[in-house]
Length: 204
Image (cartoon, rainbow, N blue to C red; front, side):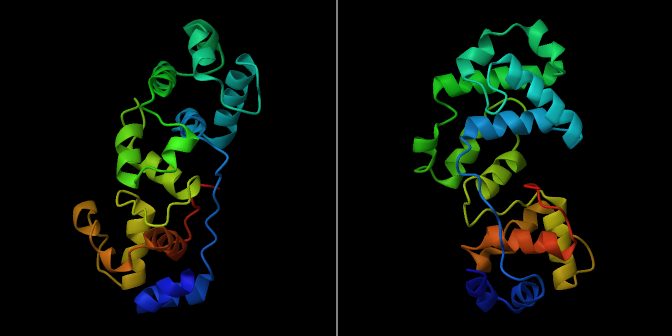
């Protein structure tokens, strides 16, 4: 697939030659609920601290290896969940996520496979504390969607600037269409932009 991208654009061809094939992994076993549960806990925390808090929450809910059942999570008191280290904001977000999973707004794995990217973004960003960037990373690194273009990601925009020799980093609005000629491979394009600035990708 990287060869097909390289054939579309000389800048991408150079990045492919430099960095090799795009190896974006996917974690297809994770549902949207599981992925967002983890993402919310990890927001604005170091990996070690977030991992400790997540482990406490999962242990409280009965399975230290998997996101809890939404109904089970909602059955626990604020006091017990806050004692795990969750902030009030994250607790509110996780409760909203769990409620929206039970309501069907957050789709299960069987349904989400048949939804277009735009609908997934619309439904998942309805969850408190979940922004478009978080959903885009889920589309890329969990679902393996091939044509995601995260225009708000500073690393992607900076990498595009460096790769194309631009005098300044493009703003999100004009950047939205700059890779239209590289459809349907924009997930790969984002990865090569990260590589251009040696950015650690969000799946790491």
